[in-house]
Image (cartoon, rainbow, N blue to C red; front, side, top):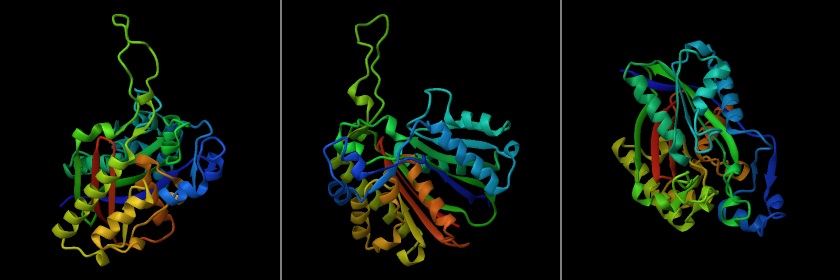
Length: 325
């Protein structure tokens, strides 16, 4: 039986660190206000690096850590809502920069669930037998789509990228998944709206306010706590797992209060959820792979460990995966 196994991980962030105190200088907020409501203390913010810089750096690290040649890469899949261009894809930009001349390259858009959707896509390609490996990366420069006068949203987000090199294996790997979409709720979290202005209508050619991140925080909170809780419960029941069987739960790093509610509803000790939101903020599609990479780099994962990834995001979307390391 073909499985898809994670072989290597990597991450990249801009050098510039912006603290809550820094934000308090440009918007009406405070370190106490942000920390109490979100758990975030600082985040990395681009000093001019676009998303391609971050994801290309991750791709180069993955090649080195997995000890594979660029020309041997079959697939490059990138998840992002902050691509450099409408086209080309970030994946094609990576392909050029690393010399992966034989790869099929494309992006996916599922907001903060993006890495989960990209990983699921790579898994299906590999399990079909069509391809043997993939670079799967989530990367964002959310700082370029944030309204820096809106204290409700600008305090939440950071920039960064993370990813994994995966390949076919007869050993343990990706063992279970539950991904889904709830398009009827798409309006509670949007960004990037562009109106249809052209030479044959009267629409003004201007940037719409909805181009920036626009979020109904209360509804997003309700969606996340309900869907992620339900998805994790489904996993635990179908795989006959207790929380003691899982080494780490890696949630999307959106808000520490969301994770606290999920942990309480499921009766899982909060300490089993790996969190780095205090240092990185919400990095959307990059948050789960960046957290996975931190665990890997710190030597906290051992062969055979069960790891659960759980994300949610705009669309609305969600995704849960069980991985055996």
